[in-house]
Amino acid sequence: DAGQDVEYLSVLTLEEPVDQVKRVAVAAKQGQLLVTAFHPELTSDLRWHALFVQMASQHEKASKGKGQQKDFPLSPLPLVEIPYLPSLA
Picture (cartoon, helix red, strand yellow):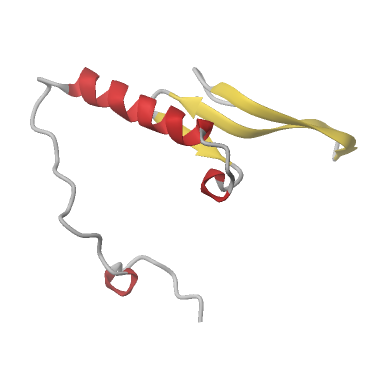
């Protein structure tokens, strides 16, 4: 079960249930949060990217006049400078 106001965007129906589970959510949205159980950037389907851009645009418009917005950093931090990133070695 999902929390309040969660919208399932994509659900996979399993041919054979696993532990009595027949359907699995693979993408969902709640407010300004978008989650997937796969990597949409690795597919040629641009609908996920379009949805993300649409959500970001709506959020930006809704937040106008509600205080100062944070600016994006000029350049991303190199991975070695992110202290909470676990090491894979």
